[in-house]
Length: 276
Image (cartoon, rainbow, N blue to C red; front, side, top):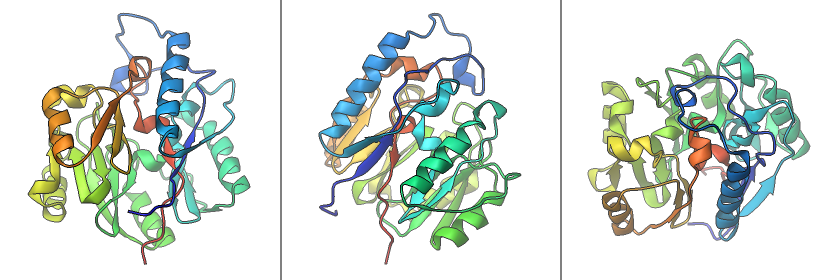
C-alpha cells in the first residue's frame, strides 16, 4: 500500500432534500428528511475520514440537492477524469459544476458523448488487487460508455451487469477493498457478472454481504487503508471484515439512505495512481 495520503472529494449537504424519486429508496418514507440531522451525519463522516485521508470540499449549488453525492461527479484515473452524464434529468444540471471542478483542479477531461449515460465512480471502481476497473451497467450507466472509458484510461475494464433496481449503481452493492478483497452482494448481479467476479477474486478474498446488510448499504463503504467507513454492519459482517484485517467504523447516515445513498456515495477518491 502506498504511503501517500489519500485525497477525497466531498460536498456539504447545505441544500440536500428528497424532492423527487429517481431510485426505489426515495419513496415511501415514514419520516421526512431531517436536514439538520443530515448535516450532522455528513460532518461526522467527513471528520472520521479526515483522520486518515485529506478531505477536499467543493461548493454546493442551491438548486441541486444531490450534488452531495460526489461519487457521481465522475471517475478518476491518474490525472484524467470522465465527468458523469446523468440518466435522470433531475441531476443533469450538476454536470457543468463537476466538469468545472475537474478542469479547475488540473484533470484532463474526456468529452464523452452526451447521448451515453455514465454516472462516474458510482459505476466505475478500481480493483484493489488487480490492474483493472470494474464497470457497471444496467440502470444508470450504459454499456456504450465502457469502450470509451477503457480507451481514455488505457486500463482493462470488466463489465458487470446490475439486475436489481434497488442496487442501481455498483457502489451500492460492490466494494473493492485494500489487498484485493471484495465486499459484495451477489444477487445484485446477473450470472455472467457473478462468474466474472468469482474468476478474478479468489474465494478467501470474497466477502459476501447478505440481504439484510445490503439493505443497510454496508457495501456502500469508504475504504482507506485498513479502515472501512460505513452506515451499519451486522456483527457477522464486522467479524468477517476484522478477520480480513480491516477496522470497521460505523457512521449513522440514515438521512442519506432516504435518497438511496450512503458513505461511498458521499465521497470521490481523487488519487487513483496509474498502474505501471
